Image 1 (cartoon, rainbow, N blue to C red):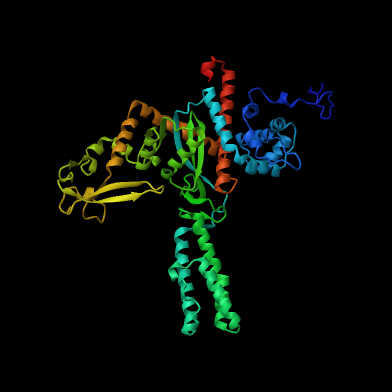
Image 2: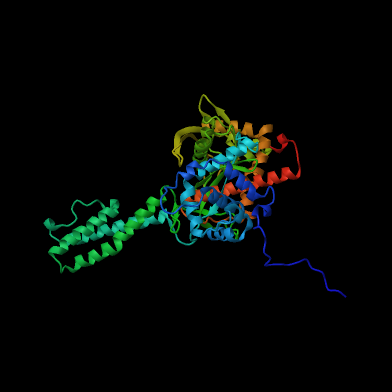
Length: 525
């Protein structure tokens, strides 16, 4: 019987004409979308970052296409991107068969592109608006924590650093007293030095200088020699380290020794399920129709204090705040409501007790202050048990961002014998006190009215599928759970690159879907 027939295989077959790589890139492929998007952008700002001189640089258009396509394809390592420019047909087409090394990729990504990429990102968002994919009128905000490129076990805490600094200050003070006690009153070394509790690294340097000056006069003084070694080799380096750590922390409670801009945060997606603390960043995304409109990176673990800086950054990029703003309960503070109202944005933002207030049991609960009677003339509340809570004082609180709020404190002098005491009081409490913030309550009331309206119900449903889907896609589908760069500026740039890749991916899918299912232009847009 004749053997099986195979198609011809000619590995070393010569060709009359070289291969045209564009024939190997399908129509509407993501690489073509990247090519068209980049070609449509004004890159004059990026070109201005090249000083000129020396060997000619690679064309920034080509480099931008490579980096954007890499992040859209889930390739984040500069070495893997460089390898792809030698082996991946889509990268070969984008570069015109120009192989790149990883240092070239990394320098462009971190040094050249970073200074202009925020404007490039905004230009792409405006292009999406022109195509009709986003309106820039409705904005869905949410945050997630991403692990930093840092060791998980080398960290510094503010509380322990401050405690160790105070101990060291006490030791420096004790050493100065000990040396002065060995000298006559007229020969005291440390007159005029600050009190121990106020000693700084500069003061410790002055201590070392004075000891060295005295040693020139008494070079065989054993006590001074010992003090010199102690100050110069132990006290001074430690004090400098403590001050440097506290300065780098700023208003934070911790920092990583590997990436000093990273803060230790509790990561929800920890594999062990115990919410382990890891060095990371809190990234904030604003989306519409699952396209990322704006993205920022923050060092604060909580979302509440991130809203205002995020919106200020959004205003600088787009020039306005969207008319409709939607977010979850993590952002529902008096400060944020007040801020969005001042910006003219309608806030569909939940607060921490919103869902509980929608239950029938809440309106029937006699232990809830919202259900108590208030007498405006006497400025008193009457609780569900019939006891009177009289006004005691005003309490002022200041937020992380400096926002001042005022609460009125009301208290019952004696809750003993009340039928509701077991339900109303916390363990250890003998009487009930409540904090009433009229401004906050009014803002929450307006927010609740918006959230329970027909529009509010629709927007609340959309929020979970709009912004949270982006995080799920990036983390689970594309495996980005840890930054590759260090420092908040580089990390913010890397996150925007990642979000640009997400937008390009989504745009490519929409274009491919529209091509597969032709529809009128208005419907495609």
